[in-house]
Length: 322
Image 1: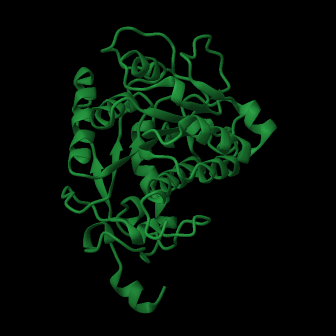
Image 2 (image 1 turned 30 degrees about the vertical axis):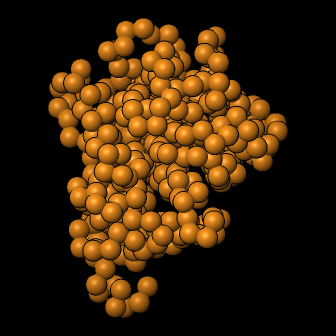
Image 3 (image 1 turned 90 degrees about the vertical axis):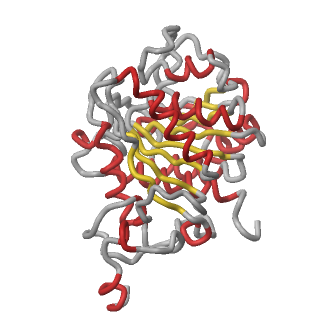
């Protein structure tokens, strides 16, 4: 970074004008937006809107994911000066990316939360942008899927997770991070036959027809075989990617509510995500980062990298010169 950059690039979350390009602001200072993108509620011309959903009132074990979006934004500052490694193009320079801020909601009115979130995401989609969401617990994905299905029809889902989240629950107004995918299937907004769950390592007898690549199989067959299998199942169908950070082994992501041993390494997750380049990704989220249990910040760092990979995947089929 030049001396001139150091003098002028500060608090770029508020001072930058261009929605494209890297940021050379000191990673340890300044206001923290995701990747130092500009905070804005104006989505005119925006390709990707990053938004936070600080909600954790549907967890079965440890809370704290309401603090996840803030921690992920802070961790992302380290990635803001450089093009993402291994992709061969820079989505930050090629696409207009904005930080749309967090969902506003009444924390004490939990029943009203899903509709508020669905409306929030629908507003982003109706403006012509894609949404990359920072959670929050995994229950938030159901409302997001509803908004996406309203635009794209029934979706394929690529889910990285220790759990299938398909435990039966036919009370559709009940909010639970372990039953949201069951409801998504029952509501007809997700097609399980064209969806894949990766990293599973908890027992659930009814998987509703999802194509499952459990963690043990990932370790056995390797990253490339897993990516090839994912692409074969998804084809070119509109796909939403949801990444529960507990897909990673607790050694790599201890700061989460329901950690399970035997999970993916961060290197495996990175290789698989890059290996599925070319899928028809329409949006995605990274969820279940709980900073109170993330004493080194490693979990938030991993989540920030996942969010950047989601941006890269979205841009891969839309980049110039593809």
